[in-house]
Image (tube, rainbow, N blue to C red):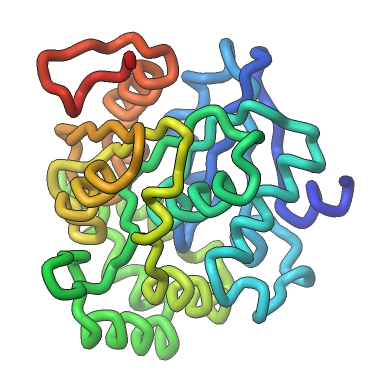
Length: 278
């Protein structure tokens, strides 16, 4: 157990008994949750961690073969859950961690109570009628930029995907998150992310889930959130007022509210896509 907690730099905080696990997205670490996590500490036990190769994880434990696919990252999630003896976990995943959480939940459904996807995409590549937001040339260009100049790429992209020009300090914060990831690991994680196709697995998920979709998000357009909602049993879709790919950073209050409403089944609306109570 001890080695897994060190490997993934696991932190356990909060005063409650219900467990919430926060899983960061590509290029980030657990620090990316800093703007919302305090809102959950009074009522929940919060588990934070870094994927191997990110943040303060143990880079010596990085395995190129294991982390070539999202299943390798899902294995880390399950390892942490088992090491801590957790059950009925509310899993909150940002970006690619949404699908990592889904994979983990399909492998060990008894460990999960609810899943919350923030800015998810089951496939980033356009495919026929499916609009993921990127064509093959776009993705190859991203790989080339990360491989040749990761820090330069991260600086150029941070403000664009944060999409909060009135608060440039948020893009600076995101860039600092990106810089915490070792460049070769970032490239491998990007390849695992952009080459994945989780669409066929969505219908297998039996655990209630929430898709939190920004009103405008260049990384995960509304079409991806709608696809998840339409193809995943017991999934609820909320299109937020927030813009950009990091609403938990750019609009923390709205993000906190939507998460808490879903967890507590509190919100009822005339909009069938905005009802949490079954």
